[in-house]
Length: 521
Image (cartoon, rainbow, N blue to C red; front, top):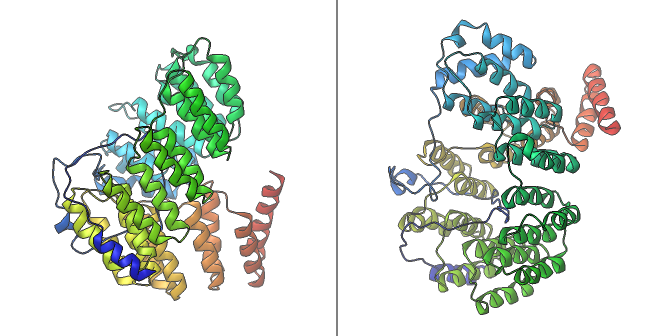
């Protein structure tokens, strides 16, 4: 099969295409291709820095702040014990008081502490005391989102009230609040927030209704969303996006028949189903690995004069690869070419992922170093992540590190936590724990100021326990708890078993107490 795939790749080439953008409806979820990514020592030569690159094709890295200022603030925050301590340590520090506060600095600090609400709130309160600086409504929205993300709903409510008193609440604020309420299981509070729109000086209209419906559907409360829609429909008219939201919602809970019925309802209300409508249902069939139905819908789209777009093809190619049918996935790329559909960064990320999984490393390199530059398609962080993971999958550590360095030096994007995950995993597999793992973690936290996420903490704690380094694992466990990141129960069980074997009685008691609180909650 691999030989057939290789022949197909040799045929698969795109002509040089101009930079163009395409619309992607927010009701269709993004697909994350984080398992494979590309990088090459020629990256700077292939993708020269240009001042007029399209923002849709290139994610420019913004120099948010001077590193010295950031290091001063971050060091102070990390040394603090709680949000009040964070605030006091910053207010009374002579070095921090000389730092010029800018929008870029605050944005970067909130991004740095987006998984640590206590530090984020402490930093924000410090910023508010600076007489020469006033936080923008967007920064308040970011803090609201952090509070909601970390399930600090009372803090979020208080902040919303504070914003209301200062006339800072926008529809974007309300969207974040509703989303976080629904995500925490309080969908009724999300609806209540919508009901109170007029108290914030906002209007109940199609746009705000769609935000509520989308919030509920994304949290699988489609039946509740449907009931609310039927109540509101008499005085708030729906639009095409309203029906696309329901199509996505029904598909999300595996009720594709209702999604297809919604298309008929959409037509009955005078709206023509678009590529997003069909693509959402196609994605649902992809989840079911029902690719025969996928091909039927592709043909139907052509007949209806609604040809699939790059998102449609990328989705199908991703799921074919996930099912292990690399040949079919590459044929889908060829079909996309034949209908004149133009590639974008996400498409190339999926293609590189497919080639990597098929073992076609040279072909993946060719896509990154030749096809993408020829078509003026710039890589993003996920593109590099895919290459890094591909090389790690094939145990090519040197190439993975080279692409990581290229990503660090890229004018378009910078590493995220996922950039390091495959290398961390590789080091555990290779037993390179002490020096290599320590250096990589220093790069993540100290060099790039990134917060470890649940997946990375889990990988580290499990790996260190298996490597008989449970003291280190326990310290990470404490860091995790301190950042309000809830570990999985299996992680706690593994760590408890290891610290008991090491006769670490105090540590075992702490883990055991935490596990009891997990059970009770």
